[in-house]
Image 1: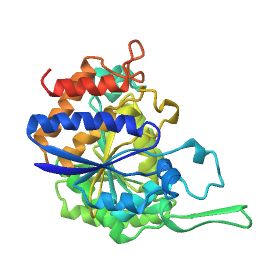
Image 2: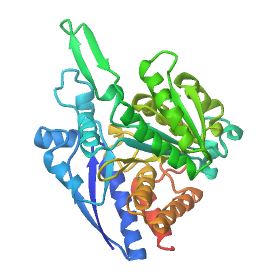
Image 3: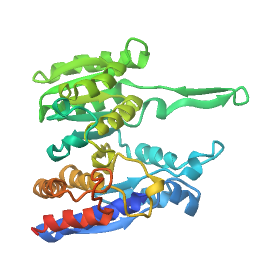
Length: 355
């Protein structure tokens, strides 16, 4: 089978970690008889410097003309530290999500037994934790209008806006995902304060009747942030809005021991996108020190969810697990004998080939 994949390396460590995921996927192709056709596009700070746009039209056309998208990272301190910048790298990510209709972000949090000691949480609390954050991705504060400065810059306004339709479609993703897991959905909101959260409850509650085998419960976001640390095993599928999902999924990533371990998928109306949840880590860019496992695991999600290649995805995840067990890890997970980005990717590829 031939598959066309659009690669958006982005900023910072993005090109390095994407290169290792591509290395592994090429081995998948060799082992399972597939051919991956790679096409590259600009996004974020690198795209601004080349084209003046954070998400150029040429990149968008490549994203439409493929079977799946592999994305690296976005963010550049050149723009982060300039409050007057007219175009910012993150605008490219938001524009891409909106144009591609990527309304559901799926972030699994898996605890690797051989890395239990790396978690800042006590091992007895974190062992066995296995949860997924299903985050609404194209609504809420990040997209609501108006968003503007007023009174000569002395007042700022952002708008949190949600519709019934936006809530229904992301809720269906969460319920269906829970059906293949432990059959529990926790809706995380701030319904004691926010009108949008009260709408979420009014919409999601009756939907549960269509999924009689799924347990639905509710939790305020501040309590959810606490429970993720105190008792992460109580969660199966967390369903939440855009801002809360952004914060909670990054918090949940710490449970595993490193943000460099967590992959994600963004799905919606058109082509699915797969990316690590970490940022661009500009201080590590070009130094061959970044952890590529989140991107390699994102490639496994691409194989499973984007291309429906289950055996291939299982093989990649098994190779990652064996690489972790062997201790071939970057500095964030192995302080005594850290390995390079390319060392880790090469070892995963080697294991995958049966070496």
